[in-house]
Length: 342
Ligand SMILES: [Zn+2]
Image (cartoon, rainbow, N blue to C red):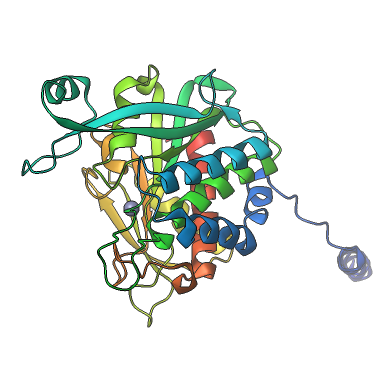
């Protein structure tokens, strides 16, 4: 009997040794991991440094620099082979109007009724452009949108010294994220479950005009199941904590918080988010447009800094490593928004 047990023990040890000798199988690379691997710093710097260059004169909506920024984004989408959202191309043109400039307390209007009223008198008018593309989902009856505004404040020839509001952080950083996430979707090699729309909003600085126009007229707005927003993901607001950023999300969806917690561990991201579940996330940026319609949102933001809405919002002041890790974390979130139940 004892001898028998000894033999069994030897066989088990032998089996264990054999296991140890067998080379470990490489863990299967998931589509999500393939997407994460495609996101990098060189791409972030290339997009941000072009969009924030002095020659684009601060990318004011409706002005030359803003239009060149839009043309650049269109070229990037075309190069990646992404399909325009609408049949006639990537551009969704729209008009906004404002009262004659000496009238106080006025704002830019995008609603047709308000525009019709303004047009009865002396008024200002600008032609703006949202830029939109999509990846068709297996289930096109459900849609998710990821977006960032690409306009900024322009320039002021009366300023002494630097006259250009370059807007590297606000919001070239967000534009590079949408572009990299779009490429990451292609890098997964898989068709998403839901149709995904990649949006570049115009006129955010003049009152969320681009996202508001889109929400007014998009015939399939009722199919939208989630919206992910970027506004300023490039800076440190406290040099002592360079990993800090604010993660806003609709409070009724606690899994949005769990996704980020898990993905920071899974992908080894150097991030220290301030989790801000928000019952009605209607303020701050284009997320407000969608939150007002009851659509759950996620919004990434690296917080205030002294160059916010100042000519000093320059590319060389960005924390590129953090920008890249936030882009990775947001790709995994948007991949889940496009594929998982929530
Ligand atoms: Zn902004």
